[in-house]
Image (cartoon, rainbow, N blue to C red; front, side, top):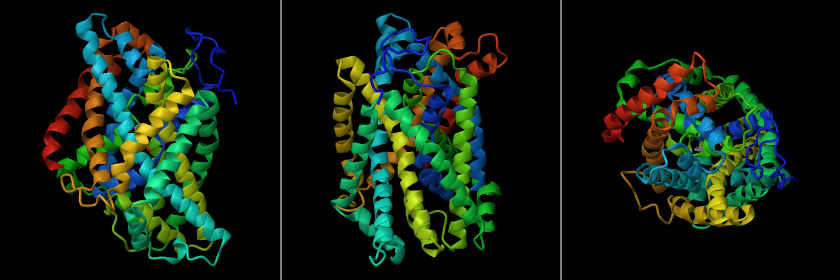
Length: 468
Ligand code: PHE
């Protein structure tokens, strides 16, 4: 494939050697592919389930619009302007004196590390989805085998994740796939994968939601998701959970959108692209919620089950459906695929850095960084079995890392991005990079970045840290 298309710029590229997206649609699909992932299905459903459903959704929507959208535009603008990895991009927009350069260098490197940390446990969960996929496949091909359809799902899942070997193996396999796509390059790997996988994923989740809604008792699930329980709004943790989920689901402040933006040519209009990505990601999460909650309630289960929700409830739903095995197969294949299109974006942040910083080949960078991230994920992979004794603030390892990322790393990095683009970057340059010069949205955008986002995020963080 055309992994060597560097240099064949599509016009508008200033630096001859940098790879670029093949088309506007390809870019939108790749960024949507990054945004849509386990966060929309696995994470959204359990966080909404733990935080009161409808009330959570409301706070989440406000967070997405008021903070997510402006930050997404800021990151894309930063990336397209910098046309490099995140560390060099930061260096290009902050004042050239050393006292301004080094602190932002530290921030940028922290962001690269944050992306690696997310991928380390993201890959573990993605590994679970791969294993479910293979299980259902075996079940379909060898109908007599007692596959997941015949089992007690909660017990089977608990047994699987407690195993000392299997979760590590699936984690390794998933990281291998992620490295494989990234090796193929921006257009031949990342864009091509997103083009194929994303439309399929949309169809499957829609089909599942329609089915779920026809189950007897489904409306209780719809009510849970859409009818706000106002008393939940009095709980501080709901705000932090919604904010963290907004950052996680849009894949914000981890340098992903900055890096993807760096492969854009000038022909794209960023405000429209940002709105499309936000709308697509949110719609996907809501539809996934409609696939999951009606089924949870129809089966008489509780929505607040934590991170295992999708892995225990859905197999139960599939088991009760005529032809459920096929549906399950498709669902877990595509869940793994959604995870893959997000994982490649997380890996690309560090790969882009390594390629520029140490002049590594793309292949070498992807393999080296991928191996490091695999090792970093081992404690998360083993945290339900061998390492289940390790509890951090009452949580298992994976849960603790996920909470630390969404409640601390992402919001703090979000403030850093808002300050960088709102205050540090020259105003006219930032506006031009965001395609907002002379636009009526220029002022609201800058205001949100300068005051709104940092203030709201800081207040929510400070008020709720005690409630973790
Ligand atoms: N947005 C992805 C998801 O919803 C995860 C992700 C987080 C991707 C952070 C990039 C950066 O699954």
